[in-house]
Amino acid sequence: MTASGCTEVATDETPTDKASTGAVPGDVRRGRLVVVGTPLGNLGDLSPRGREALASADVVACEDTRRTGRLYQLVGLKAPTMIVIEQHVERAGAARVLAAIDGGSTVVLVTDAGMPGISDPGGLVVDAVHTAGGRIEVVPGPSAVSAALAVSGLLTDRFVMEGFLPRSRGERGERIRMIAAETRAVVCFESPGRLARTLAEMAAVCADERRVVVCRELTKMHETIWRGTVVEAVERFGVEPVRGEIVLVVAAGPPPVPASEEELRAALVAQMATGATTRGAVDAVSRATGARRSAVYALAIGLAVGLEAEDDDPAFPSERG
Image 1 (cartoon, helix red, strand yellow):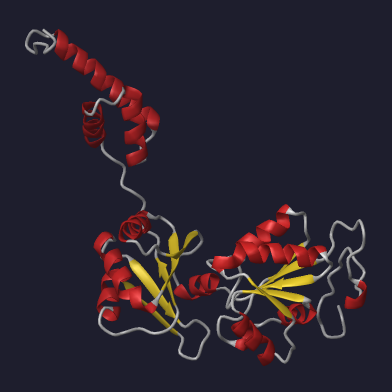
Image 2 (cartoon, rainbow, N blue to C red; image 1 turned 60 degrees about the vertical axis):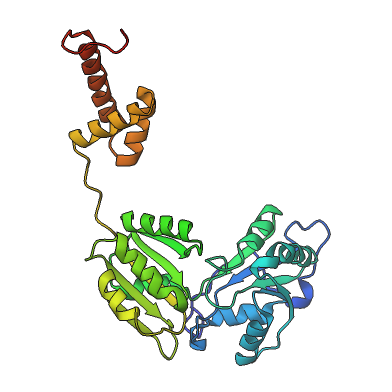
């Protein structure tokens, strides 16, 4: 333990000052990329290690230079050279990051809030550095995903992250139907202007008792956490305009009810009526219902035997003549 009470963590390198960390010919590590989580809105959530990383940066790869510059100003640091990695220019920004690392620089990767790469730019940069064999470190920090899950009070031992839902009506509807059928908790981001429509579309396909948590302005002065059913959410947010950043946590849905044998037989008959082979019909029905393929196959064989018997019975004259 150190005098401050913090545990010292051993590393494979001897600490050096910045002047001695330049590129060394033949050193495959060269510089490094440090992925840093930044506050969602409350500056107090920036960890001491996160501040140290910002201070050590030779270059900062960021989503918005103005917002990152403001962060540096608020924590009393002078901002270094900045590279924009906003989603439309992230690939070009990744090339600049690689060049900086190759030259021996420490590049810190941040976004406007939270952890880079989680429904934010940064993934392409991290992948490019990995692919090039570069050195990458991470400084964990605030995340809207984990914050919303923790405060939701829902069962979240298993969850899926959807990010922002598609804007196009068809893709959006398909994604919401998938959420309705999901047996894990679901986290998604939404804009204030689309919140009411999203909740209404969820209510149309989810059971009335399906619970949802609406988190607004997490960690900020006007943070609010609303809990209720999807139907109640439509009533609550369908009228009043909402402002701020929104994170939705949708409770896990119930496990699907197994299809009965009668339903499986009917589905097989419908598939075969379209000209599907026995194998094709079995695969399609098994995928659609979640039933075991072996069980569906046994029913299909039974149906085939029954159909052959009908063809041989004089009471069921064949159409083949």
